[in-house]
Image (cartoon, rainbow, N blue to C red; front, side, top):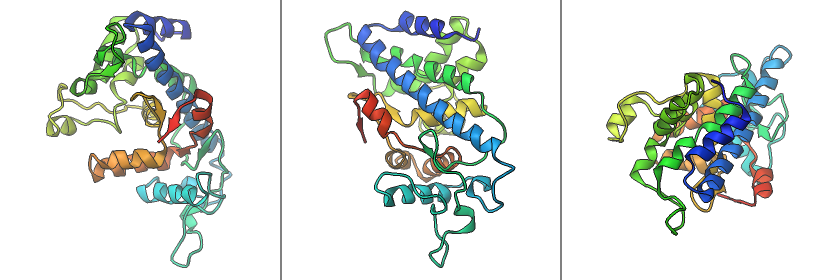
Length: 276
């Protein structure tokens, strides 16, 4: 089945060991679903405008780590705001390079991004976002029932995607939907990653297999359940990604260039969370 919003609520309540755990994990999933929908809407808007963009528009170029770094630099120069259209990067002369000219102003809280190969299913992205972290209920060391503050089980945490995937399948959720849980960790875990890092997972690829899954994976990086729950800027996650190697950082920056940079400040204010 493709669960309805009511069924998604039931799936969360069924597995949640406590109301405290539900509040933490379900809220995170709602936030990620909202950000994923923002990203998908931005991508779809770029796709709709693809035929009317200037030939030198950055949105038509191939995404790259350098492109993301240029957008981040522009945002930083604007003291946390968004760079002006046409000023995301510069050539040797100090003038904006042709491929760095943003033709489309920020929208939906997202700056930048590149035209995707097709439209993204915003409804599917929302469902995936609401379910992607449902396995984290099963990796709590202290789950709210023992009088201790909530705490995730360190080394076991990496298994939450697979555990969520299995839980959803057990409850009759379609494979296509269950994969949102399986394939969202980090910027995608490859079989080589699992073996090289000796992760407690069956050797396999745990990476998005379509744009909808990829959108949710990217959105997930902007909010952390680590207590206290918090929002994460694109710049901060770039530093976090670098801790797992330059290839991991490069992959994140390419995703950032493709999907654009999310301004998390309005959401952080709405949810009363800090930004790191």
